[in-house]
Image 1: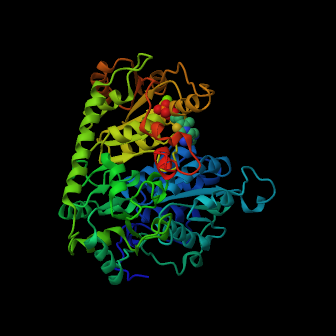
Image 2 (image 1 turned 45 degrees about the horizontal axis):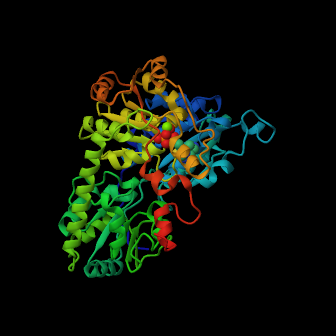
Image 3 (image 1 turned 120 degrees about the vertical axis):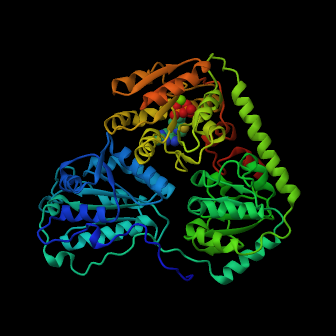
Length: 587
Ligand SMILES: Cc1ncc(C[n+]2csc(CCOP(=O)(O)OP(=O)(O)O)c2C)c(N)n1
Ligand SMILES: [Mg+2]
């Protein structure tokens, strides 16, 4: 194990900050006090008798309760908070179906490595195992998705289990992610004895930075010094190194590719960004430096069909799952990404950099970006007469403020948005492909930064999963703009079905829904837009009347990059058809 530096003290406090262990307090009050002491300002949740004592204790302590309309939305909101702040966020749901409703949110937080603590209740101990109301094997249900799945059955277990869950979520032993803790509801109203909290000491929740070992760093430097065509591919923790990484890349002129989870770590106009030349960069790089990024389907599993077969790999991450996966590194460094970036900044860059290559990539990137913007502006409507999604996204892009938070959710529209919209703060369905995050993610972004522009672009199908959360925005005074790309279909699936199943399309149409009226019925503003020329004015109107839904009719007659590359097809060997064909020597 590499040496560890002094731990940054981000999620900690001291006894003076209000975390009081008083004899006579209830267990629920202890839990609420602990959370507030950890810096938790709000808990996302949906009420239920099994958790009610904690809910009430939180409210009495001044921790905001963000009440939602479906438990999954509570976890999605906590996930968004965790991504936006880099800190632990908390959700709470009741026993039984409250917990099962939260499961998809946990799965998404797990795949996206978002530090979320989920609290729940259980039936009272005397009724356990007897067919109690809302009784389920809760820990067993969530365990595969959680870094820790725990219960506290007695008062003296409460603080140690809370710490264990919080540390697991924060990423001490495995990548950050969800952690689960429940309590039998009768425990919550028990009064504490001094011995119940004796011996517990406040300690930091944020894992300490891990410095690269000097030997590992030297080997990494050797690889970089020898590389002619290096590229950095950034994952989750790279975002925490944003400004330092930006400086390092500017100094060394190493090309840079982001991934969904590091999007926005560098400004779009940074000279190292070559995302619109992604395929070529991956194919031609002779050194691939991954920063806290596993080689999953989005990176072709590191396949030599997508990457230069001769390329060397330098893999840097705190946890082995992010550096020792489908293509092992020639050098693997177990350390924090910010520490690695800081260490590299002190040394020389690639001495033999092929400057012609980097210049070509950059030119290709700039040209492709410009061409897309031009195309998006002029692209004609589809055969059904409705506007192309690129046209919609072009108009959305024009109204985005520099610090806007953008959310994308859907099938085709997610894919179109990934290439056509650019924002420093960008949240989407992630590697789980989790449809339905749009409204809760946008609500969380709006809640965390009142006054900031929040625009969510959501497919009509995906919107349906969590549309009721517009009510959460209305009740909590949140002001996002939800732009529904309404092609009246699960369109990426519809296109795939037509192409692969003899022209048939089954169970993929969603005709005739009025999402503008749905918004109005919940007390939000809503407006339908059928004509692209109307969009500038409609988007301005929506911003002024947010929370607002723009129900924008778009064409089904548009195939997105993901649809073209075969993501919807899910081929057995390789999620990206183009690369699969290359692997088989057919492209
Ligand atoms: C929860 C969930 N259910 C189903 C799918 C499969 N799926 C992927 S994309 C898609 C269609 C999405 O439709 P919509 O949101 O309207 O976007 P569009 O493709 O029409 O732009 C479906 C059903 C999924 N990824 N996640
Ligand atoms: Mg659709």
